[in-house]
Length: 200
Image (cartoon, rainbow, N blue to C red):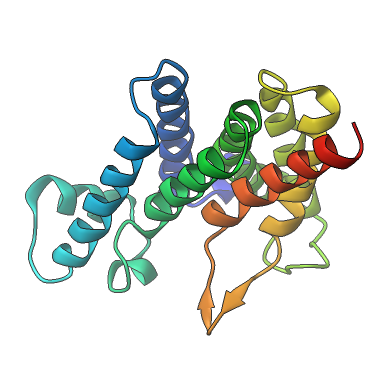
């Protein structure tokens, strides 16, 4: 089944999980805070725009090995830029436990959904024909189990399910498609916040 998964996408999803775990560790132990994340994001956007004009050795190698061809000429490093943006917004908008649960859902939901969907998926999602329901279910289960480290099982499961629903919908603003790395933590965090506010 693993041969159904594109080698580049496998590398990208593993990297996604590793970066997410490292980021969570750095946030939990107060090694980085929202200000530092904002500075990293600003530098990242600047470097992304700069690399369209000139090659920067280490970063160019990284992009050559992990970036999709369709993204190389638009906004290099788009996925990580949106993941950092989504994580920063979650930390600013929600209380700490919900923000951390949202970030861990981002870390695991999309990669697991993609990998399981490609390897074992048979049922196309009615919301997005390029995705599989089996992948969404796996993404929701694994990410909700991980999110239970920070919030109650009910909140974790609710946040993960809603995040996976939003992950399968293409959202555009002014013909710009929003990246799921931005949508997932905001959808998960908003769901958990509203449940805490009105139902618990």
